[in-house]
Image 1 (cartoon, rainbow, N blue to C red):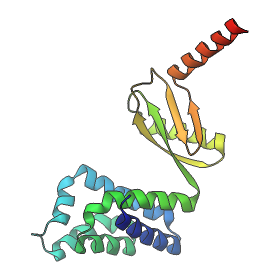
Image 2: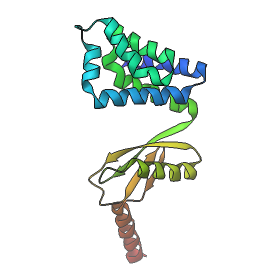
Image 3: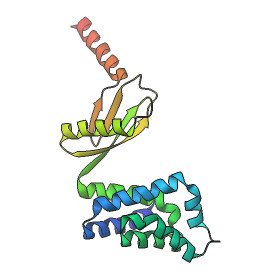
Image 4: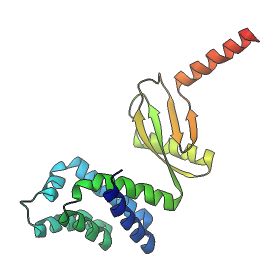
Length: 180
């Protein structure tokens, strides 16, 4: 990961921790990232050398006003003024990791053959959270090698409910019976 992004992220995580608003900061940076993802022209405007810093700051204030986190607004303004806003996606990734560490939240992946709904991902997260006794946040990744079902990887735990795994298990059991 980019060292500069890590330093910026670490600074914001420290501020969030000091303010005791870790969850609020996490939700806010993820929301701003989503705005950038859905509206690339906003990020393009903030990167532009042809738009005044004053106008860029107004855009940032508009983006962050609903969160009432003055330090977050100032943080994003700083990224814009220092021409580091292009690192925002990497910074958000590092912020999420840092805040999850502080909140003792495990990150993981749920692999499937097709995209899962947010509700399904939440449902799977809750089941895994109960199994490992930790709060879990999952991201969906497509794995076309799976025949069906899902495979969940969290920290050092693997929960494989895929059809491929079940077929491999059955194959091994049949081999054992033949050899036994």
